[in-house]
Length: 346
Image 1: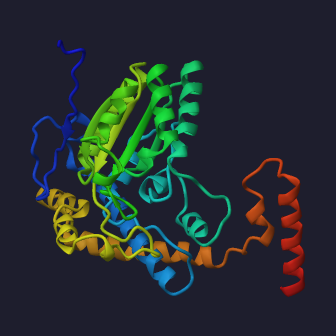
Image 2: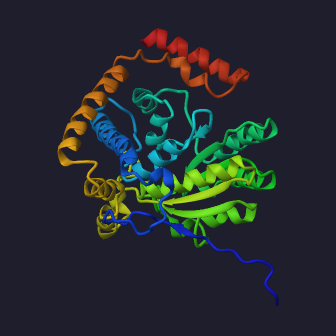
Image 3: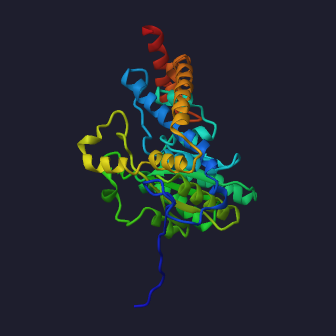
């Protein structure tokens, strides 16, 4: 038999776990380490926010919360590479990117505190592909970026987005933040694919696996994908390799299904550690600066927490108001019943 086609998936890394460069072809925009300092500070802010949010949940002031511990480089890198008019469709854990796109931390707290405006995962890719189609048809210099986890990449909506992006060469970047676990399902149990990046091959997209703990690699991959999309060369699937250092949510106990040695090893490769070493060795960051900034992060997060805690609780009928534009009669009846019950019982 002859070979009909051959494919390969490349892996991109610039910073190893020790904070040392493993390549000498840094993109021009990233050669000055100083440009990474604001992004490292953003990663520190996200980690502070994450820790505070878990504390709020533990004290009964927040509902179930999904931590992003270990994902900071992937999320901040995605957000930093986007431009103002690009469209971002996150799932529920990409706080670093959300904050860079203008979402306030107290808005995230409101969501986990019961705000009914909601979000989705997996399905966001299909919606984002429609935004990308609009950009292409109108010849607008914008791209769409959708994010999901390894589990979300198994949803049918993800494949629908992937297929349309390839067929129409849409300016769409599909980011799979592969943290190794879809709740308690290991990556090996949910797909037979050797990589998740290669899922894009079937749709004719550019595909790349990236060290998601390496901020420089994430930025470089995103910038390249964005340039290709704007040039009319189609979309990209980026598999950002990272690890979920926390439980899936505060309702989960990952010790039931993960080995302690696996988690310990992941802590040696986490994103903050390597970037901190790189910046300190470059002479653009110090332990003193980090201590001062960490304290400021704590103050800023506390201000956002106070905004959340002092926000008026949504009325009981809000749970019915963000699903249908034209609710069916039975749902309207339930809504009226809920309002009546609240008036009766307070």
